[in-house]
Image 1 (cartoon, rainbow, N blue to C red):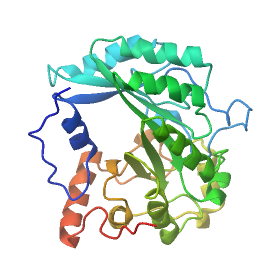
Image 2: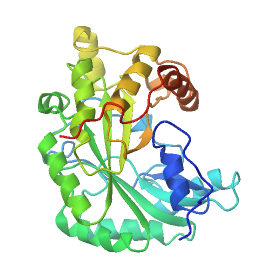
Image 3: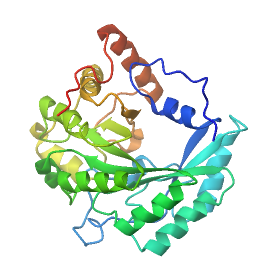
Image 4: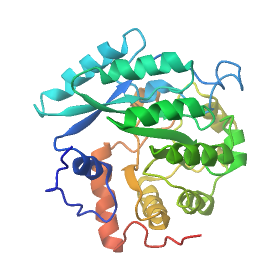
Length: 315
């Protein structure tokens, strides 16, 4: 596959869009899929109720729900995006809940259904670090010989007390193990982190950057804590707001910059921020779009003469 060699990274950090542009000779867009999975801390295997902050409505597009097959969701998502770039290709993003939690044959059936679409060139699979069996990694390694495959683990925090408080049902050590096993199978691996979880101060948040920088990761996805209606965390905030520090926009921008200064300089940054629909937010958000946030953070990075990895220290 010929990479787009004309793409140059002029940003002071490794941007995910640039990463994809170097790997593919055409525009590539993720298409979110809800394949009907659940989680072990929802179905009673590890717990009930899910993570305290979780409401999947916050990130699921209208076309993305389980009443439709994987092929139907892909078709509608591709139709939505394809008019912009006629030669655009797509990555099937298995996003909602835990997308490696099920029988191996059923999982592979769903992944291959997505890959049979002629415009799909790869998979991004979101999952939990305690839900990745070795036999699935072997199967995904085989798929990666022909297609782009990125495994994205919801790590959320490197602090085990925080993970327990938010009802993740796994430890940071579980995450390290899953990441090491994933990469040892030749697969690209990313992590998702939430900045500002209850009980975590600024230095604790920044320590996450130092800890994950010792892992063999490809991508990092982070966003600010958002309190979503009808979640346990929103109710906790109502009862005990002192546990929380909800960042103001400019404060969060500087936190993000401090964070990426500590990150490994080779990691790819996929996201700084997320904006949930206003009708789902229990606490009002910042009122700006993600691309507007990117403009603001890039401007602030330039003002600070900052760059990714500036304060990275190996070991």
